[in-house]
Length: 471
Image (tube, rainbow, N blue to C red; front, top):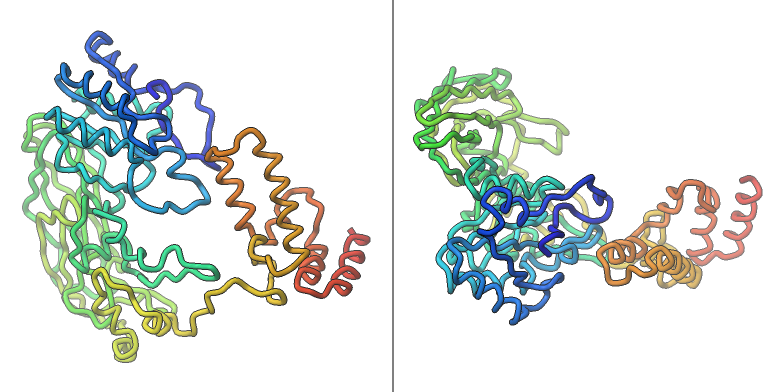
């Protein structure tokens, strides 16, 4: 809706703003209301394309010089406490963008979303502005960028994969019913995509500008250091365009040959610089011992492996402009021969294929817990109330909590808040009842209740009465 932009998340982040900007009014203030034509394009949920709304948008676009489409994830697609099932935009949003791009050459997509999305139309539009969830004044900032009043200078703090299936956790998440296994280990985000050479939609650190920046003259204060020596990096960055702008210079470190499994490269420093047209400035970034370290789980500490390291400087993880090498001489590395023998899959991490459970167990160093819902007799204070289905008392407790939540969301059925509350009652562990302020149970009473839930009714009842009396 024109007057109700999505500017924040739901759940615990929900706020009542003192005022709320919307993009239509902010653009009207900058270019004049007579120069704007508005069409809805999709309904509130966006779950299905609405032909009449798309036709109205196409009719409005025919006479427009530039088309701005506000799209993204609705409150129903991003809900606290619920995992997203996919990375797609609402079908109504995708359909609108795809239809408009066939009728107009200058379609600009402004995204409002809390996390990466797939963009099947990415090559059919003129520009994309990632607005994320910008808060109550975000619309004014977006309008300033669209008209060129402000030069955008943000960089992505996460990789945008082309599709959900490209994500390394796709094979294992969500798992359940009893465990979730993070088999990807350290290969998360750009550490995975860059290591295996996976094509992405937009890489980590990416961000365009209305100007251009030139990098040159990378210098290291040493070409050989010990594990404890700091390293000073300097380079020059010049604005070679026609407008002022800001650039985020990123420094990545790569171990050329390693006896432990590591990502292809890792971000270890960055600096943001503001430059006028034709202005050049020297950037200095300090790296300490941790920039060359890895965490040794057997020794429970950070170690520096001796060898040759590359210093890679760029505008994103995939846009490396300068590089230099140095040698780290002091040896702190442990013996990795056992690692290579038992967890070889992590030394040559597979692209697009899952890590086996045996390889993950070897990495974990202990058997993987059995992936099943706990049975009556094995429930603990950490067991979700919704999983205590084998116990009559557990089922009654769950129904009671459902009823209490139902009273709280009365009249809000089908809303993001309702989804959040319903998920919470399914997944909250029994111990959560201790966090309800002046609730009906103390720790001793809850432990006694757990005894009853686990099938020892009279033993638990006696303990419950005693705990209640002491309370």
